[in-house]
Amino acid sequence: MSKYYTRLAPGKHYHLFNHAVGDEVLFRNDDNFGFFLKKYGIHTDGICDTLSYNLMPNHFHFSVRIKSFQDCITKFEKVKEMPFNSQSHDISDFLMERFSNLCNSYTKSYNKYFDQKGVLFNDYMKRIEIQNEKYLCNLINYIHFNATHHGFCKNPLDWKWTSLHAFLANKETRIKRDEVFEKFGGIKEFKVAHAKMVTPLSEYEFI
View 1 (cartoon, rainbow, N blue to C red):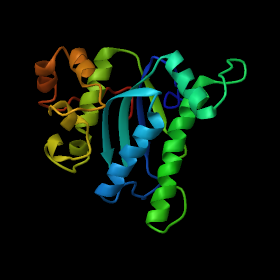
View 2: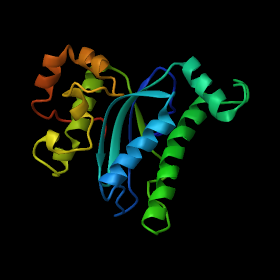
View 3: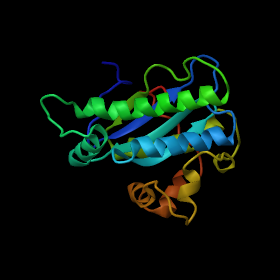
């Protein structure tokens, strides 16, 4: 199996990302960006915690931690309205179904809104397991600088659709802010690490 299509498993961290098909645009205006985040919250509720994100006009990045096996089972039983049976049900398939439903649901609404038809996202959302905290911190930094990386702005805070704003504000957020600060060694260390963009680790090709 490709390193970009690892199976999702409870308790593990992942880099999730997807790109629009061809020259298509995923988000044309603020309403589109906001609507996608709302859909994301609905479809991922109960299955993962979000550590960071960034939405670009034609792609997105998320770093997440899948919730515990028991939490995922609880969500499965609530969604499927049936008891989870390990012999007939696969929790990894259920997790991917939630993310697939997110993209499909958004696509249907997007096509209706813009009176168009067809596929919007690439076939499969890419997912890479993050196996150590150093890489996870570099990934979070990379995600927050993605808009500058692609030339949309010079300062990452000038880009509206990034979780970086949640880390630097005192407002309530669903982002696991305190947990991420702890992984960086504290708020001060987080800010120092975000003073400049790190070079992405060479073993992965980021979009």
